[in-house]
Amino acid sequence: MDMLLAILFITINKSTIMFHHVKDLQFNARVSHPDPRFANLLLEQFGGENGELAAAMQYFTQAYAAKMPYPDKYDMLMDVATEEFSHLEIVGATIQMLLKGVNGELKAAADKSEIMQVMNGKAAKENIIHEALANPQFLVLSAGGPRLTNSQGIPWCSSYIHSNGDLTVDLRSNLASESRAKIVYEYLMQFTDDPYVKDTLSFLMTREVAHYKMFEAALQTITPNFPPGTLAADPRFTRQAFNMSDGKTVRGPWNEGEMPDMGQEWEYVEEPVSYVRETKGMSVQDTVLDKELAKTEKLNQQMGELKSTEVKSAEPKGVAQWSTYETEV
Image (cartoon, rainbow, N blue to C red; front, side):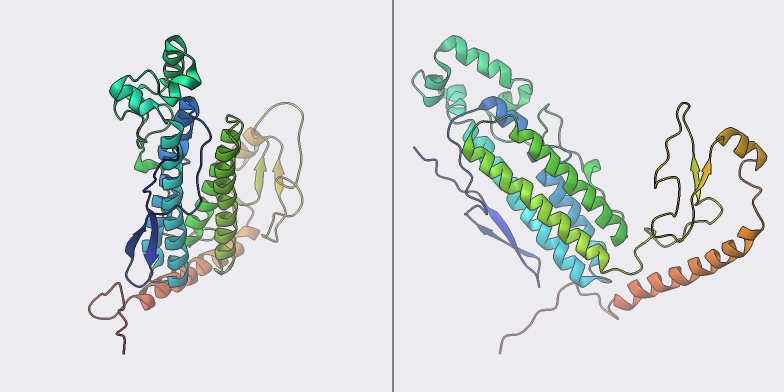
């Protein structure tokens, strides 16, 4: 018998940040049979460090700093954050459906529920619930309702969130976040044979790819966007690639040839200890770098003024107002 779902899909009214609840899921999550063990595993994407709540809160908080200087990126971050909240609902709904019958067992100990038929008797029932108890709180504290923990019962933590107030830094963090979330979904797909659940995981995994490309495209519209932040790299310490391990020397584009996008050549340091001693802890450098250092310091000042002006010019004069309400005629 189909379960009646009342899961909320959050959308944003962009002019007012008004959350409007719709009782349909973005993707029609379905489950063909109960699977308490996989329900517990799936908690990783509900309250884990690479899960949907972490992504939603990361993009949601990043959006605030982007609002004034980059209103278009604010719009994008809010859109993606909202979609991540909807994905959290999909994951939560799937977890609940995977526990079909278990919740009732814990409340009424019925002997003829669908879950009992799947588990073939009392001994099997005790065994499968035991296997689900790698995270005891999952069943003991919520009777199987999704809690904001990972699969080991560790509570969701705001330290999962990376929001640095510089959009080029935040967008690069987001690329990494989407990559980690995608690979977790890939791994999860190996632990279920339910075709409906696999479809749901495939949808969620693929949306991570879409978000990755959105963030990548947004980063490319910000110029300059390298290096992250405001200060340029110090030319005295940029080129060195240190050989920090014994054994066979391995060379590649990360330590030889031209540095990517820098217009400089790598300086491979075969013997780091000797190099550091000879340069007195890298305090003695070629005087040729003095002119480069002076240029860098001037560039730092220019970039600081540019970014400061960028933010200040976007701030409203007089009374601060987050939203602009349009009056219908």
